[in-house]
Length: 358
Image 1 (cartoon, rainbow, N blue to C red):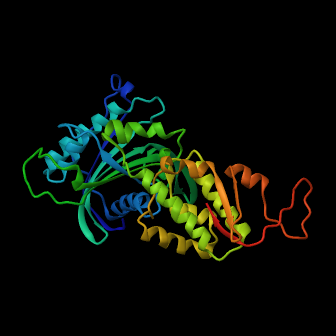
Image 2 (cartoon, rainbow, N blue to C red):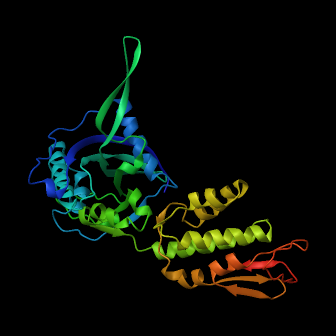
Image 3 (cartoon, rainbow, N blue to C red):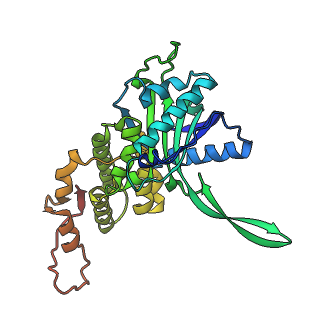
């Protein structure tokens, strides 16, 4: 996906609170669309593009709940609603989001509903974006009597820290030409993506469920296991093909195994490339990922490569293969030169070069 030329046509924002606070607080639901100046529009576009651009942590969603009155049914129809209908249904969705916020760790904030157009891989598409922006605090600089003053400001949203927002993006990839309110849209008409920094770590992943599951009625797309397997194979083959020393290849493969075995829940090929490959190899690796269709981030699912993560092998051109657990291989095996002396190590000489690591 390569998104450019995003344009915003209408925006509305509502206050959302935790479900437990609904009995004591009255969230403010707006009755008018927001008129933004060019600087505000550009800032909003910049924030959206920063988290959906290639290499970000957005992952694909699949719709599970298409019932009338639920999020997908409302959102898919909002594209064709007039302004009054758009406002009414955004208020309805904001109320549903407040009801979904049952965890005590969830903060109050703003729910921003945006409609516009964008070019996705050269095709113009309509979209609906929903942002849950948590409130932040900060200090504003102002000049008074030729002196610099700092003033405390509460309830700041959409600052540079993208960790304080969740984003759902519904891109209409198949234009439905039928008319009429509450028409039933096919879920295949939309490409749906979600961003939430909490999805990066499995220990906090459940904190994102209220947004993409309870509120949006979606789940992570089922293609994660095949994409994880493809990422493993592409990276392994790339390591074997690059012109570098055997020690470096062994180290790179160890990084791949560790990366796929850790507690993170998102695979980001661009970040992996930057973190582990030499700078002169990074573009080549990313081009290979792009050609194979996995350049963007996706949810990690190691179901199809569990066996490969439990055993690692090094095959030499002399038909000798060393097999061991990955952690043992990297903790208890190294390739040393003829002049190295390391107490406690057994030096083994093997004729041939490393032919393959897998």
